[in-house]
Amino acid sequence: MKAVVQRTKQTTLCVDGKLVSEIPFGLTVFLGVGREDGESQAAYIAKKIAFMRIFEDENGKMNRSVQDVGGEILLISQFTLYGDCSHGNRPSFTEAKEPVAAKALYEHTAQLLRDYGITVKTGVFGADMQISQHNDGPVTILLESV
Image 1: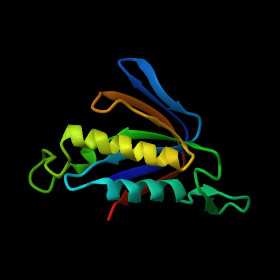
Image 2: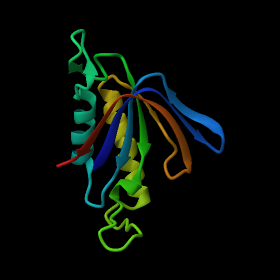
Image 3: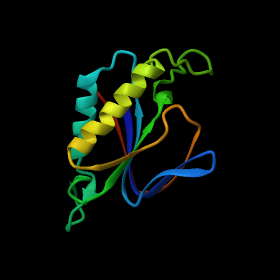
Image 4: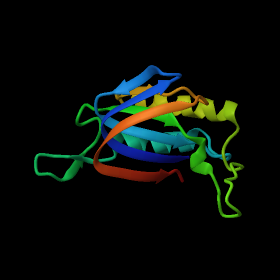
């Protein structure tokens, strides 16, 4: 799995002009599911996201997790994280998991994050989503499961 984790002050997600999900502050996470990914990769990514200390403490140091600050997570499916442009200019997505299995792992990852006591909102898997976010920092972390 691959994830782009961004610390945000606010994020909204709309589909067909209608608000679907919104978080007041926390993490906006774009999650890609790879062809070989399974439940162990989902568990790894969820734990990393839940405990990642990228929020500032009283001394201005990044020492707090999304849980510590009471933030929320907006988890957005993003198969294009597996786009490969190494040959030509048009990306190949052969390393992305097929949609039915990818959706199941995406939903499983969301539940694992909820199991850590975090409020998690999601996008609409496979939909054309419009995302507006107010990045904080900016702080952007790239994660890849092992």
